[in-house]
Length: 324
Image 1 (cartoon, one colour):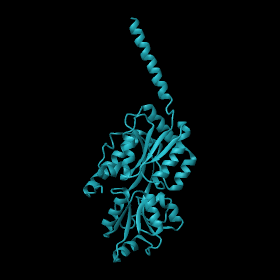
Image 2 (cartoon, one colour):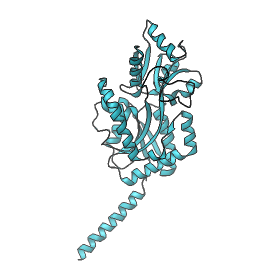
Image 3 (cartoon, one colour):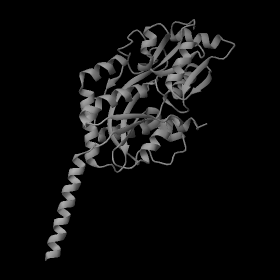
Image 4 (cartoon, one colour):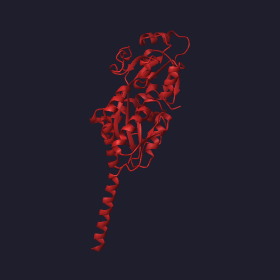
């Protein structure tokens, strides 16, 4: 009887200790992995979210960059981290939809991560260097076809949204490009502004200030409707390219098996950050559209990601895209 009571008391103490431990999460800084170079849209969004999540968590969120392989290196770091909720990763269309279909990875993108929340999205658009003569998409297509020399098109990683955008554009418009691959949107943007390449298909939010400042030309948006931040820029559909829509969205994940209490705290921190008027203003200025509150949770992110995989994997595999 005494042993039974002692065992029961020990279990109770452990349970109380475990609950107290869970309630103290986080007791140290949280690391947010970013799989793309500094200066790009994913890095920018990561730093805004990291700063905005800190007050709710009561601990710093430290951004760590590990770029390469379309974001799969950073994602792999999250997958193989200790499942305690202290390593999280920001991902997007390229890293969590396209890349797992074409890169040799040692994890399952839907089974080996714990979703936290959808964050925000913005469209992609075709932008060109300011020296390009065409002023409309129709003129641009005609100009490309009439040229004797190749038109250079910057892409961000094999099989990325930027890459598929370029392939889709070339196929539907009946043109050819000389593709120039980059490891991130930041370097591609720099070369485009500098005139080293002719065109690129990039996340609209990352190039908005440059278009407004006259450092880039915007030709068309890859969306169902015109982008509110650039209402004078037509959609690809309006420009005669049907079906040209890609939503460049971002989400947040942590390691599979992380305690529910940690996931809940992280999700709450995301919701608090996205409800902050200052964060909303900063994201709106970038052209980012925040997902509704009803989608700022693990289940919604999991469902959204699955729907995107079901849509894009057949297209990627049908095109025979392979990692280089």
